[in-house]
Length: 327
Image (tube, rainbow, N blue to C red; front, top):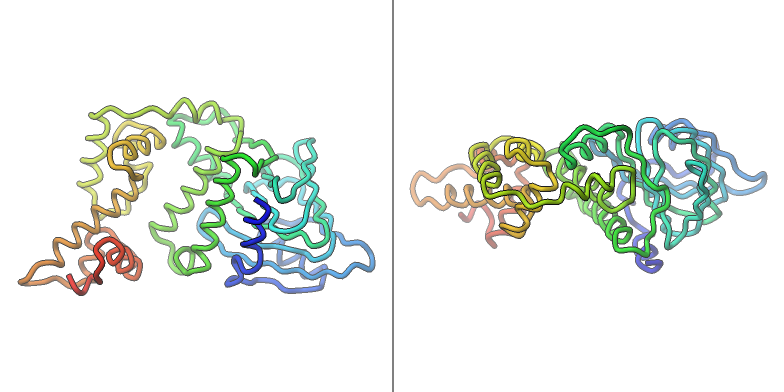
């Protein structure tokens, strides 16, 4: 895992620089704008070399952050968001919920919004950070469970990167950061792909990091009945051109989101949203393959539910091996 982390440390998110500074007050202000107001202190005589790359979505942000020198950070309570921190280089000590976690190549951390935190990042420490809005994550948890939450979601602050769950969580966050860097996510007007990606990251976090709702998530993992799947498919096909969300389909089927995902995986070998994308592409292919009165590519893309023409062309080419203009 150490080599895997180091392999993404140099240029991950470098397309999105927001800060390069040696000034303590500037660092405190700009990093505070991205996250929250906090105390930032450095040992007298040490040289600060801050590098902060940041890309923001609707409900989360991805960050690569390093201070160069050893720093002490006191954000108090984050209040509005959860903060998942993967050390890409160096080490850090985090005191959270009365527990001290020594973070390094095999241990990441997650900060809960309603608990005090103090951190020391050692010299040379650089991290990949996933910030997730509290209300959004708790809504995703509620949709997965299919019932109202009994209270705030609180994660174990220690993320074990030697486990399958920890490694999967790390891999998904890195994949999202790479997709952003390649211009596939969060590089323009937010669309369905961004919404799906944000929901998937929140889901992966909930399903792979122990929390006070983990036992409730396990209870939801049942296969749906054929009647429930039929309701889901009927609703999906009847609303093909609408901006559907996975929770909309689950609600119409009378399922929680996790059970719906299990049903689609069992029946089709893919997620509900991947199934929806393929059905939309198939509908577009049918209409664009007409020999007479052939429709405009842009009109067809929008009519089957794609809001981003460039993404439609890329997905179409990947599925059929030709550009949409070729039919």
